[in-house]
Image (cartoon, rainbow, N blue to C red; front, side, top):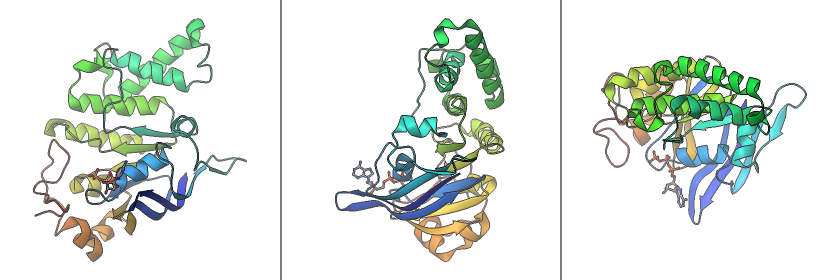
Length: 272
Ligand SMILES: Nc1ncnc2c1ncn2[C@@H]1O[C@H](COP(=O)(O)OP(=O)(O)OP(=O)(O)O)[C@@H](O)[C@H]1O
């Protein structure tokens, strides 16, 4: 689906992402690590929002295209090639309805984006597609509400809906539970698992209970470098991961909290 080789990003003297070799297959892979480990920077590199200092990013386009080098692709080009990101910061139009937000995203991704406004049939198709996506993310009943009137959790569902409307192959989910009330966390977790059924998903998530529950695979970044990569249980038990990030975490230690973070996390990212 997507792979990086030697991917590196330096900010002046600081190496935020350090020679990362990574391959995402048809799976739900979580990317974890302490604050400042380089997770957001890695996402920014994958989406073309940042240019790497060194290294390559490739996407498997399938068929005769095979692996395509997208190292220098812009965010728009990367999205057009099938990599979409659900932003940690809301990326919807607040004064448009929920349905309109998704319809516009579907239309922008459609082949006839340049002519849609003259084509009533195409418009109806996009509305239908948007309604199907809202149904899938659990927002069918909110279609006509303004996006700005959604709760934080519902906004997260809408962000995922907007990303799905781009018809992605790879979904990058950046802390989809951040700021979500505890009642809504189960909905978001169910949504993550659902979209992973038919997309490759890379998830940044601080709540280890959620990571352990949903992930096929966990990759741990520390100071920009991969220090562990494997199934959730072996990564949890890895002494280097315990030392760098988990600080004695056992499954079930954490309450699912609204802000998606582990309680009592100290400044180093360890759990006190
Ligand atoms: N634009 C920038 N200019 C300079 N340094 C940056 C920039 N963006 C990130 N950094 C630094 O790069 C390192 C990695 O940051 P990044 O935000 O990628 O970490 P993170 O793992 O996403 O952290 P968090 O879990 O807190 O979101 C940090 O030391 C950060 O201060």
